[in-house]
Image (cartoon, rainbow, N blue to C red; front, top):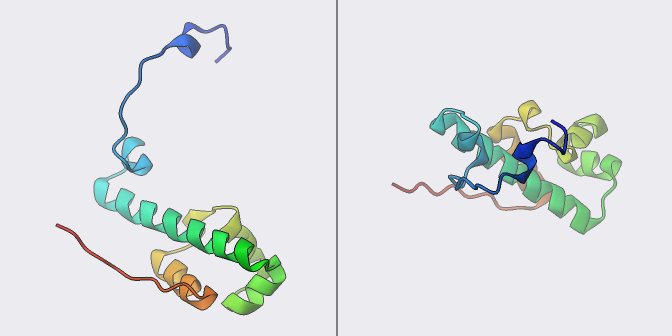
Length: 102
């Protein structure tokens, strides 16, 4: 789409649901799991930066390979189950907790 396309000047806004995956059309249950995976990945990435770990050091601390850490920090959420991300979060020193709301 070129910037001369009139859609670039379209000022209409559509309110989001609060979950980008739902907004992209995913099934609500699947979208919630995807959102959780993305949030856990982000928290792990921020913690790794805070600790100043290289990818090699992070791999040693997390018990995975450096290429796996690379995929984690690049946000390749499709490569990680929620279960694995929670395990990595705990190994990194985070304290994952699950709360369910009705």
